[in-house]
Length: 431
Ligand code: PGA
Ligand code: ZN
Image (spheres, rainbow, N blue to C red):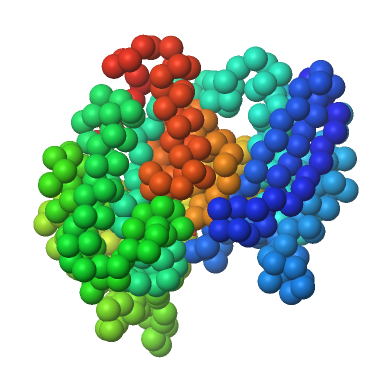
């Protein structure tokens, strides 16, 4: 199945910002496209997202340069290659950065090309190969891994950069516990989402719409109030759920005399202060998972918080690890965190993404396959999550169709493609 043509175009994401779509045509006539997402609370160590910086178009956010990279460089570099050879394709893509060598995720430096360009090609090739092979995408991607319909971690209340900095913490999420399958757990999640709206209205909150990922973005007095409202909604709706937080602490952190500090709710906390604060919430609100409780370069703080809380909750590194195997390896070596958030566009190819999930599994770390705050209608992430066997996915909330494209694809995989019949899915609760 030779790659015959690769082309790209600029499309719009769920925030109305440009992003990249790539199309791959195989010699057999199979055609497939893929669209890449884009973050807002991006980590400093993420691979570059190439944007035009032309103030005359989309306030500098156009992606015509990335499109051109595909049309003129990346596409021609993989034309003639076998679409089934994903590792070789990804290696060739990375090599176009002028960094020859195996794709073993040793580098996140896609500085010349942009991870938005390489990822678009990587995903479109994989999809064309799956279609060509007559397999569902998840089945094709899985290889020897054991596919699992993942447990969702669902955003209900948003703060931080996704909701106009109303409160500092970025996501207040739920993880359904003990449901037999994804379908029934999503039904329960929608109840919690609606109950939160009712509770917020009762408190006099004005809700004019939903935040970037489909959760509510209310003006509340504190981060703890959001956590408490969420717990109350879970109880009132009769659902069985744990709470997860994405603190996204890099985005309200600073340093005073080289010591990391966290500015929230009109005060400044040390790393120890953050750990103590969160420690007090775990049992009070039933928290099972905390992402980025500290900043991306606060390794000492992370070590401390892992010692303090690591046996009680999942500690997930997003801005900390940026889907980069070198940073993950450092974390594993130094006893930092116990889970990794996995975002394909933080690193730029599928092979590097799978390498991180596989490394996490090998080291006994959890992995959560994650969307970005800027998304498209492409459901690729759902298939990736199932294929990886990671067991957990974070897509945002249960409103906004760029999110539902993924949830609905997961439902379809569970209902029709796993082939196990209702009530007998491979859905596994991770806890
Ligand atoms: P982002 O947010 O896509 O804006 O980075 C998602 C997250 O922080 O998990
Ligand atoms: Zn995050």
